[in-house]
Amino acid sequence: MTSPTVPATPTTQAELRAALAEPLPLEEVDLANLDNFADGIKPWRMFHTLRHEDPVHWQPEEAPNSGFWAVTRHADIARVDRDAETFTSSKFVNLEELDDDQIKKRASILELDGVRHRAMRSVIQRQFGASVINSYGDFLRGLTAQTLDAALAKGTFDFVSDVSADFPINVLARLLDVPPEDNQQLIDWGNRIIGNTDPDYADVLLHSAESDKYRDLPFRSPASLEVFEYGRELARQRRGGNGTDLVSKLVNTVPRDGIPLTEQDFDNYFLLLVVAGNETTRHTISHSMLALLQHPEQLARLKDDPSLIPGAVEEFLRWASPVYHFRRTATRDVELGGKQVKEGDKVVMWFASGNRDEEVFGNPYDFDVTRTGNDHMTFGKGSPHLCLGNLLARTEIRIMFEELIPRIADIRLAGDAPRVLSNFVNGIKKLPVEVTLA
Image (tube, rainbow, N blue to C red; front, side, top):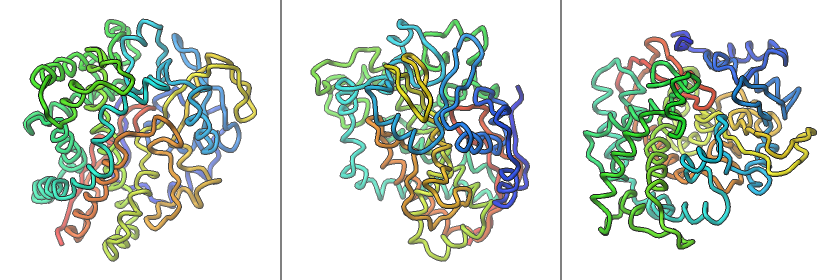
């Protein structure tokens, strides 16, 4: 597989509508084929066909995987996401199928349900609550200014590396209380782990024979070992202290159920923070900037009326859909969307599709910064697994565009925008732009 690109000329709203207007036959839908996620258009055509023709669709997979139910309508996704008793996370949340020993070794808070899940969330939940996040305003604006000063001074630059990736990783470094000089290493680890299906990022591709050597590691990525080693050293330094950073909380707090975190619990929790604390916010900022380039009239609205930006953040999140899907596993035979799902079947919630559901969003293929009642699914929907960092992500995105938009008189795409080759993360690897300052 080659790394995909999109043309330097932005895909306009009219061009997107034209592409969607040409029906994609159901037999051409294949959500397991990564090449179908290469151009930034075909995924939406596949989701469109499924929502209208087969909203709970059986998707075959190549061995050793056994196939999955693709759930593509907003209402059905919400039903699955909120019913952890019928649709469990405990068998893994990605498409890869694991045996019990692998699950035991790789399980993070994402693969827990019920009491233990709530207890594990509680360890750092307060650090992501409104009282703490709202106190970060000056700190976040300072970091934003630092990022933008360096990027905008160049005139022409890669928006992903200089802005989208730089800003969230600075925030994460502060929350972990690690030095800024470690930022690039944190970014690289996230790329190598989450980008495990992209040859530009992965040390070992997920579906390669070599990956079996790393079958017990998160994402089958050898980079996980480096993250574990880094986190363990931080834990060693902070155990027994009174720090308020996330690492200190993890090593010095007993969860509410009274069961302390094991070393493995810490490893997997820390790795999740490193990956999730950067990737989704970064990709949302990138997609949002690209959308504003593709829809200059929407950028003009935000320049004319900055008070629209907080509401626009919800449209950014809907439009970006930085994570395509999460998986659950049926714990019993159940009817879903007119289909008979069997106990043990994989059930995959395609949040990105739910974010374009015509039953919920008027003109869902319009990028509209004034959209109201934006019931998007980007952080989960009615789920006990609702993204713990959703308020922080919203705050970071809002402040970034509140600070960026007034500074630019003009911004144009200056080259190709290659995408992460993945059906899990909806990411942009580079976004070259040319900026004229206001």
